[in-house]
Image (tube, rainbow over all chains, first blue to last red; front, side):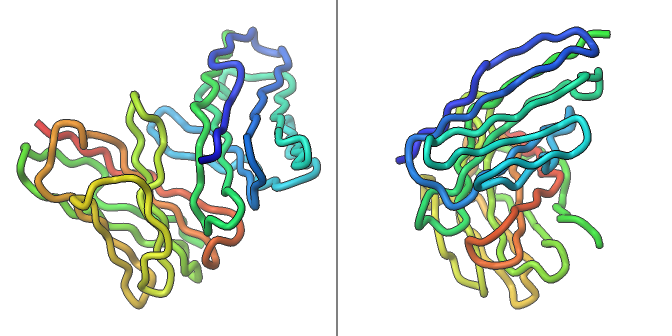
Length: 110
Length: 113
């Protein structure tokens, strides 16, 4: 089956710093989403981005489907950005089955 | 518009018992999927339902089952609970089968003792 790899697994930043999280996948996908999991376990939707580039405030994401990767860019990080970031893909012809990466745990220090 | 809701939020059960978890999708969403999250295995797909039919199934034993009702609400059931079933169970809904963005509920945290 498809493999989804996220890097780095852990990241520690000072408040105000910028960061880039990476997601590589091993096969064609119909859908790609980025989530932020809060301390209570809820997955918060960040981007639905099968291809192209999107921006939402301090966050932006780019997916290059032909090269099988996506990146999430966080600028001017805040302590509230701390948590685990997940990339998830729906493999081609597999309905709505999301396959998740192992996540990047981000800690932003004041 | 209300988000995805899941009940109960927390549950403690004993080995050998069974449990039923409930999920109400966003109004107008017809597809519901279930996921299990554990520290060791991460987030894993359980099954997907659309029009009261299971459309897709993950690699879980038959003790895990689910169903969807005509109003798109879904339940999942785990029989003969094992310690390893302790996990956060997340439900997601989307507009249509296999299409579009999925939105997750707050989850049910199950502890098996």
